Length: 579
Image (cartoon, rainbow, N blue to C red; front, side, top):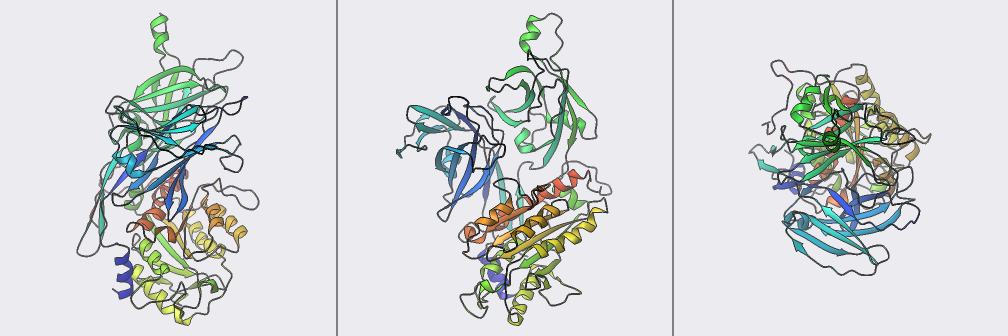
């Protein structure tokens, strides 16, 4: 093992990881100020986390139309580090446009707290918050016997309450073996399932048209409270709706308990937010699993009041589960799917002369530069054969200078090739990344014709600045979104990376210059500077967290099942495997 590789790995803590906890945050809000006399707000929360003094968006809830007391089905899943102060900021917006961007949204208020505050709360805590137009910054704490955390917005005489529901924790235990391989055991089931619901002959609640039904699924908690898991879209003017297929984790749905009761409620949507109750039914995931093989599972939708009052009442319709897909990332890997990992390193002139200590490519005898730290942090997760490619004036050449065989022996081989090539290079500009995306996409396109889950391609791009071929890059990403491929971009140095967020699709759907949207989200962008002082391996966890779902999403969208392993029937795959 080279000294510089070992130094990079040690500095990132890849040989020893601390214990951490997975935390789920769910939000409701009560009493949002109705500022528009003609309509109610369409509220949406954006969750941000502070990093080096900057507030970075983590995720956002769905938009709920015409509602002052929203309950969100979106679940925020965060890594909780006991030793860190992780500052959170919840921003509330009224988004009344046809898209979820913030350019035309009205900012209603915000609240700040720490993840530790939330995690340690055993009773309810109310906090007086600063809201748009309010100069007050005082904080007031109140406790009661409820198991929730309440965060209060104050706007003149109007008040709103954000309720944080009880936290679901998953133990994540890390230990180190003598050979340097880190294994993690995740307690709980983090597999995702896809559910496809429809209904027939629902009650008609409207006089001049048919009902506009939507379905809500609630989980029954251990304390007998109900927790919203998912809310479907509304199907307008239809008594036989077919709702869109959706994905949910088993942890969110039933906490991994296949016999936990689920309450499912069907409503008739009304524009004023006062939805009409149609009926409900109880189910379990054990029952839903009956649809895994394509068989339909049905439940009568019952209105209890009608059941008591009407003598011949049978039901208010039938709800049908048409399909339940349950294939995990590990299913595909164990079925023979190989991850083809390509590393693209930015060797443009903006990095500086590698012989100069101010250069981002400067090779210190004992200290790894930022490129090496990012490369080792992410690459260690995928310790396979790597294809070493990097943009230059030709925007594509092999780092090991062997065009016929550009592959390197693992991540250490990539590091050694990177160090060896630096003295032989003359750095130029500009920073074009579309060519390398297109090159990997060409390889991924060959996989499309196999109709099997054989190879999935991941491109890691390490770059120091804003790219200069944004239009071509957007086009390349849109085309790549149809292929078995993901793109990870790590920004190195202190350049302005604000335009790169567009590629990530966090503030709306990425589109090509011609207006074509991405088929699925395949890009993850992370500035390395946000992780300089973060917990060990935090960079790797951040940039790679979405990859398993992206792999499963692609193959599910193509209807491609993982290959069966001889002697192993399909079912939940045990976690904690030793490598």
